[in-house]
Length: 482
Ligand code: GLN
Image 1 (cartoon, helix red, strand yellow):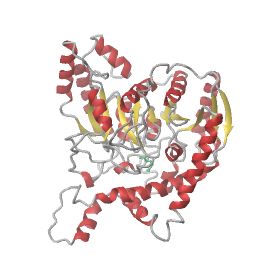
Image 2 (cartoon, helix red, strand yellow):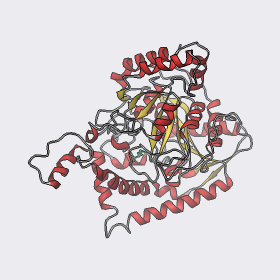
Image 3 (cartoon, helix red, strand yellow):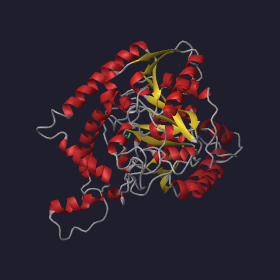
Image 4 (cartoon, protein in one colour):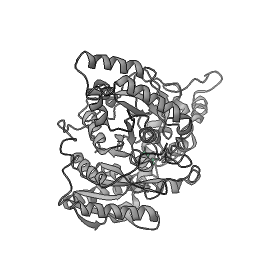
């Protein structure tokens, strides 16, 4: 059986006896070992995956009650904790850290008998857009290994696109699920803030980030979402979504739906011409599906990247201060150091991007500067939120290219933080306002993927997935040429 099947196909094939969990997991592990030296999607592999698959097959055979995933392989970004396994955040700072508990999303997937096939590579502490900042070396784009796979959940997107799993969980603080999904031609969803528990996700900027599913098909993202949402006593920001079923009615279509084109994200100098023309073809597709389309403006978008980096570095500065190498860390001898000099020496294990953000994060909220930066950023965030609330009174969806540029070559942006940060211009709005947004693969231009982003109002994931499914239906994209 091919590995290039959807989650729903996998489940029905196991149910029908066309394959077993063990057979599928064995094939998946083979696929991973065949491509891992080239693609580097994973930081660690679940050594017990085959054993777990056998146990699930046994349950199926003896007609015991079985979870919804039937042993389906799912990969997990390495900033989400799995009990008794390493959670490195792709940082030397957490080289030896073993998590004593499961993230809520992990225990939910385990209870539905997903097999967590491995932990995926990322930019250190999820800070980046290319996976180039992983302390363990970058992941490569399976469409062309000279190009970045996007980030920070690059390993997750690569593992899905290169058939190292059926689906994956990433985290999205400013686009880290949607950006690599777009660069690797897979689907990635950033849910409404609070829909999915962050308990067990290593915090970067916890006031805006969410865990989100990545898969090859929109319906698989819906299925995954069905099993990871809900109120969690361990995360006070979670909301009760009353066990919404995101899968039924996913094919409801787009007839009469009102779509706004976000002008500030879909035009201008910095938008790649090929991305722009692909985007207008997507607009055409939506029109043909019967939706009504209009251009609209969110004029705060101009300030969102600055706002995002001010707010996130301030939060990161505080969140990452716990890595003093005393409570968490790697082994470094205490002998011969004063308290402060030990910590500052130990912290040299942070990579350059994390270090930059921690320094900025100390400065931004400091006395004398908070008014100039932090408070202003909070004002922009509020204004943007008001504009989005207004926009959704008129529109069902707001669309844009997911990323304004095509996947780029390794090293192209690493020395130019501003250029790198500008790649986030279309994705950060959903995080700053809390609304859900999804990236849907739309075209392949000269061998490089282009994704389209759809936003919906808060907690409107059901409608959002219907729109994404309809758009997916207008495409006929090839699988990755491995
Ligand atoms: N590129 C953004 C950053 O570096 C987004 C990262 C993310 O979503 N985790 O902060």
